[in-house]
Length: 212
Image (spheres, rainbow, N blue to C red):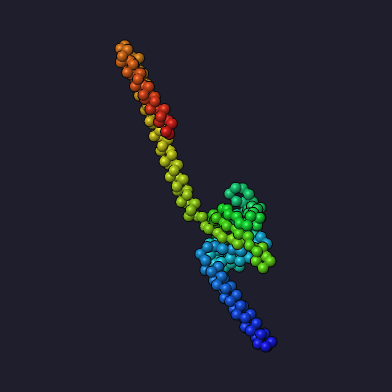
């Protein structure tokens, strides 16, 4: 009976090991084939990443940049003026203290080009290790579209200002002409009509200013 029990335990352990191996391979395949750029940070350095990261950065393989601090794949300073090393430490500390953190960052490709990314950091514990799961999203096209929209809005705002000033100037000219006509006319009834027109136009000008 003891031999049979031991045999059953061995079979059960082998089956459990097979399932764990199969599960591990499945997750590894999903990790590598994911179109999202995924990295793993341990002790403030990149220790692993998938192919999407290699493609995004333009390197030949992951070994060219792994075991580096995040700031080493970035310009010296971020757009807000902070040193990349110091800011990267802050971002990782926030992820560890809050569980996760999301922010925008500038990274550098293998050819030296800088590009914007949105970064998600999630702190996780795995086998007594504290890891930070990292996901990047390239914002290059988004920033280009955003810049086009901003330029378009600026053009429309400039056009609106020009139209506003022209309407305002035209109303002032009309008011001045009515005032001139009123002052050169001796008929009080006609003067009152000219003055009434001036008041109406001034009211229209005030409303136009408020709407603008």
